[in-house]
Amino acid sequence: MSENRSSALIVGADPYLIRAALRNGIEPVVVHGPGLRDWGFIGIPDGVETVFAEDTSSVESVLLALHRAGLADRDFDCVHTGDEFALVTVAALGEVLGAPVAVDPDTAVRFRDKWLQKEALAAAGIEVTRSRLIEDVHHLDPASVEDFDKAVLKPVAGAGTRNTSVVEGRAGLIARRAELRRAGMPQRTFVLEEFVAGDEWIADGVVFDGELRFLSVSTYGEPCLSTVDFNRALQVEVFDPVADAFAYDLARSVVEPALRALGLRRGTFHMELFHQPDTGKLVFGECAARTGGLLQPELVEAKFGVDLALAGLRCAAGTDPRIEPSVRPDTIGSTYLNNRPGVLVGYPTPAEVRALPGVEYLRLELPYGFRMADALASTTEAVGQVVLSGRTREEFRDRRDSLTAWFDERLLVVPAHASYPELRRWQKENWPESASSFGTYSDD
Image: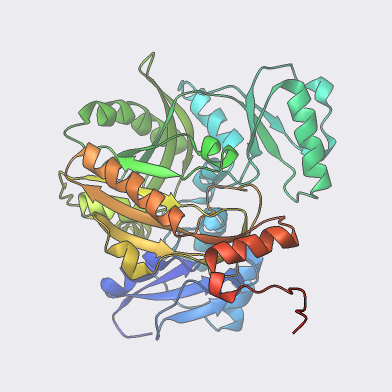
């Protein structure tokens, strides 16, 4: 390690944290798991020290890896992560290594366990949806659950919408339990939450010394579970703090007391809320003590000029994040570029996409040959993601909708479950020069 340079132990190969560290004279040591090599998408810059751990969500696995690398005694200015599953791990590592962290173990637990999270908020007098803890969903006695109309069943310590589903009454719960058993789902502890209708909002921000230093509020085009259930593109639009001041005022009324109740004193957060237009109420959904996924870091930087990853590192080290937003008047948002069931064999080049009006950032994530399942498993499955801008909300939405239609028209996917004749017809339609058939022999 270089003399007199600050250093950060980063658990998980988070490209935003690595970039923020390198841009600001912080020497990162990155602990990564098998996914970095297995997926092969994220590149670690030359010269960055890396450590392989079998499981970055395990304190034991990370500590063993640090000892093998001779790094367990190094003095780090902070230990930090952008990985939801490593949040408690990092909090515990801070205690073991004697290094600063953004979130202490008790607070980390309240952010990871969504049942404990709701309990803490309810104890503080904050309105939350009713929920029931299911310790082992494989062995749940449905008779022990009061009948209900509609609810959300999700892992108590999950992330995104993976293994999350809407269940209709006790019969739906029984059917979902059977599906989880058949799938051999390793997650057993779930929470059954009252279903909340409304527009799904996102609050991303930074807290330091218990004070809300920065807040960005955005909205999904439609709730996350709906995009998964109906295989639609996940889309986000950032509210403008001037034109949409009501959204920021309303969000603050929930965000600030919720963060106090959960005990977040410093760090970044990503909160999901449900806005009910008919009543004007904003209902707490859940909150993570980390920077948001999807393209939330890119959206915040495009709209406000704020680097959430850098703010997170500074908060973890115990230094003032020094946030100075510069708000763009343009409408900023993002959209997924959806895949279709089958085998992916072609899509427009990055240069072609970037040449379209309003495109500010592009990430094409799936390689040719990727096999897409019949249905989305979570909100993390798409060919790519794009950040766009428009001078007005209408221009932004026109650009977004045109881009998604344009990309879909040029997306080449070998259809799933197609018969040989169907595959031959598909080949003739898309590559007529490559198709051939075994005709009858002529008499010549």
